[in-house]
Length: 196
Image (cartoon, rainbow, N blue to C red):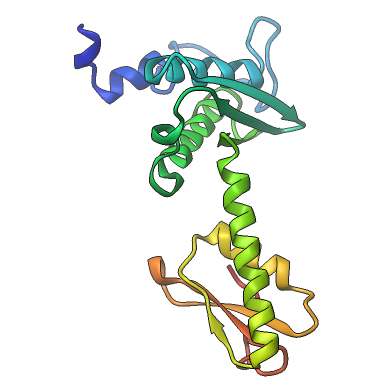
């Protein structure tokens, strides 16, 4: 089949995501690898390198394993397309990497994927927004609604301001419009909590 006419299923199968297990294979205990089986780091590296070679040969990946957590950093080349708008492509590839590991090892391992420090920059940006909001609310004594955020971003705000002496936080809204409200401590509506 011509490389340009491969479907997404063909690509995922080539990368080991959609392969069917041979009939008669016994399921192994989650997290246990046989001596001839690749470890989680090798499985993840094989998947990511295969994908990156198809996208841009200038990309490469560095993987660190910390217990059951695998941290992978994609570097080299123009990573804008790999990261995608608002990090969506990066998150999708992270999800697929998790599926690959789950296929081989059950739920024993987690993956965190980053590219060119994108996640760190996003976290720093959210921290700055939270710190600025806390300062504003402490000075004005008026609640401040932050822009809509994803659950992981709202969690950063809640954790950062959890023990702040002058402000407290609450998530409000539904779906895409869910956001954090920063209140002066003692003025938050009853029942407010730091929920993502």
